Image 1: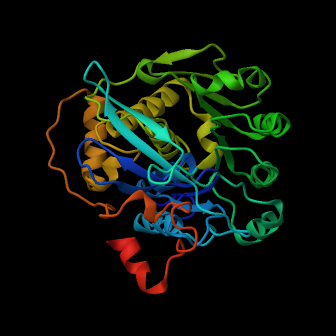
Image 2: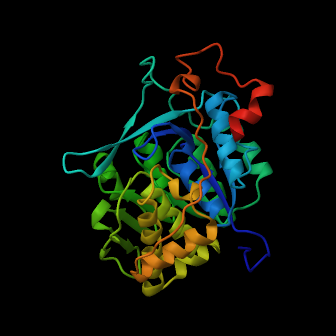
Image 3: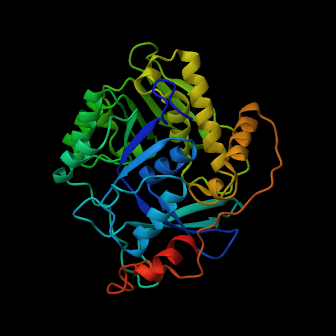
Length: 360
């Protein structure tokens, strides 16, 4: 949807954790390969919702990186700034979905290869040497999104804030406390999960964000603003049949940004009822995600129109029956083909194999 002010799509620049997600689910024993990480999920989801998305990362030209680029390109995300130098091995996260003793699905994340037991490549932050390049090449976005702190991310957040962008910060860990505290002073929106915030709860006391959101899992979320309504206000979660909860927090972010911040900082002027409506919409988007395996499974089985119709159905509290369509990135390969530890010398994508790696 174009921005009514200038006739172009709203733009989101995302800097942070981009990874290859390998999902072992209950529906299909074959592994599925998708872009993952908070920034990766928010980037793909925002593009799915009609945004112009520019991701910033140091992904290498390895097989995992090609899967990430291919998946993002599928949804219209420009990959030009995914290989900022110096490149590093693409991070990999393995999600395994199982059934607990009560017969309910649960997921766990694994950070090592099940074939060779070596650790998957870790996240590497963008270096400050690339910051000026980004400043020179990118126009001011409506939203700058970050999920981790580093000197480069803090500098870019400060730069884009001065240019008029909304700064949306969604940390999963504190990292460097000094940089974390700086980011808390720069961001307009601060969102975190109650579970993960335990490690940085003390630092949160000093934030200067206009809007603070704490997600509470199956208990919904609570929010407050810095000036208009400073007391916490709670919103319950929607009840849906759950297949997998992974990525639902990222989808809530996509839903909130898309409904409230298409005009960037103008969304901060929303009154309480408008904000509640936007957050309820965000929760409905997150609830829909729980019906599918993987952090963004619904994107591969539903058209955009059906996806939005089901969100409206959840918001209205009505049951719905839908017919799924399959867009799969599944390949009949093992984890070892993307794990650098299994094949350190053969992990680069050969030109003749690129089409297969992206579109098989």
